[in-house]
Length: 103
Image 1 (cartoon, one colour):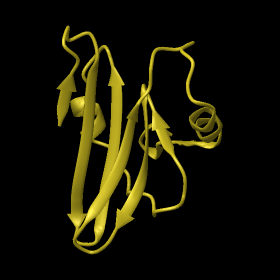
Image 2 (image 1 turned 180 degrees about the horizontal axis):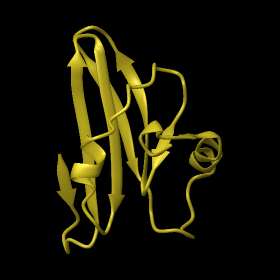
Image 3 (image 1 turned 135 degrees about the vertical axis):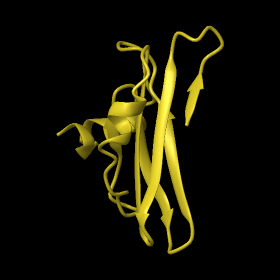
């Protein structure tokens, strides 16, 4: 899934797959270029609810709900570097693990 802002200077790319029933995978990127092919080749398993934020270029996400037939992911598009974030989000981002698709 790809979204862009109104002037198309930023693209949000998300990949969600379910290669095995009950084993959903998710990753995302946000930036000036499209990450589709690269992102789709390495989509990692979705983290369990309560395990904290995952992050990658320009965004962060966490699993809110994960059942056999339903997944809810909260995705936050981050502002440009240097922009002030809410204190709680800054604290959580400092503890966030980078997405395994880039490790």
